[in-house]
Length: 180
Image 1: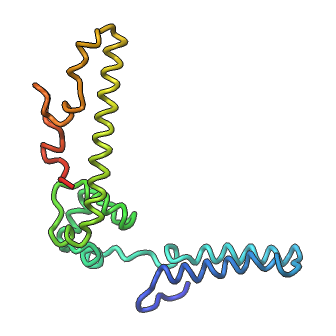
Image 2 (image 1 turned 120 degrees about the horizontal axis):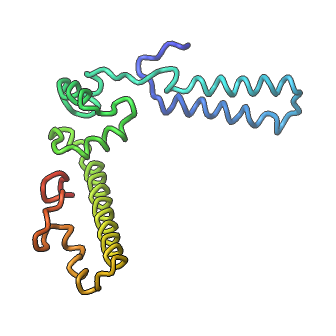
Image 3 (image 1 turned 180 degrees about the vertical axis):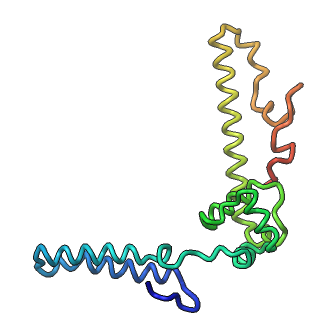
């Protein structure tokens, strides 16, 4: 295994490996290749796949590195690990996890504001779509049960927001989701 350089640019490393792989695939198209030579080319292609940055240089998941990457304290990294933050699965999963949290440190919120807002908006839209689907299902069950249509009119989308009479407030109003 090669020793890692002082600063590894993983995307550049993988781009170089992919370029070598594509050239290996093109060789039989331009030059006649024997069966034995083809086996050598396939072995070289497989070796290139094994040299991708994720396999050769696993990511540094130390508390210090993660705290700098996400603009949080070392102690927060330790606490989040205990709470199940998916640091090993990459930045996208960590940001999804952060977006579902009630509180995110101010520096992290500022650094990833656009992405966190978009993730929260998607979560809220999904929540509303699920609520509307449940409401339609309840209405359908009422119709199948033989209830007349005028008794089902009170079930409207406004009940999802907690504005209807006697309905519980939505999770959005209870503070489980942040406003987008």
